[in-house]
Image 1 (cartoon, one colour):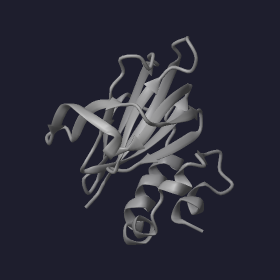
Image 2 (cartoon, one colour):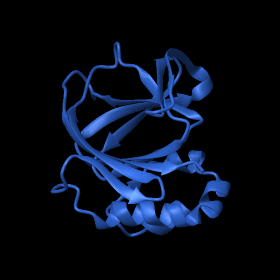
Image 3 (tube, one colour):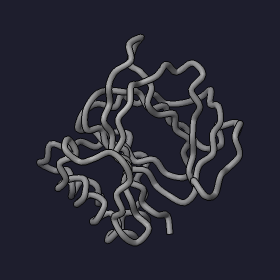
Image 4 (cartoon, helix red, strand yellow):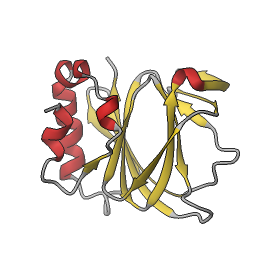
Length: 167
């Protein structure tokens, strides 16, 4: 059993099946204390009443609580990070997250080290259906295009992104 399953078994908190392909045993065991803290925060916090914004979780780890309306895929840029692994948890709503290998992203806005982000376009990707109670883990080897609408209608989403430091 990988480390993710020990947190979500029997809880109203679901990892997407795609995570099994993304989880590496190296991250599972070498960084167990970081994963412990990240998932304890996710499972013990009432995100429906938590204020929006950044929450410091210690040792370079933090979470962003955000609300927005989803947007069309057309014109939306993908993003990638180098210093952090994202755990994206959908508190409320539905969205699509496109994900692909970083090698499939054509960079249009170079890496900003201060913000740990670069933007680009992607043509090959896997479409993930993100819904309430589901989470996704996105590694620095991935490019992702989040916040996309399902169908033709924008939908309200409340999301928490825990930023887990790579080192």
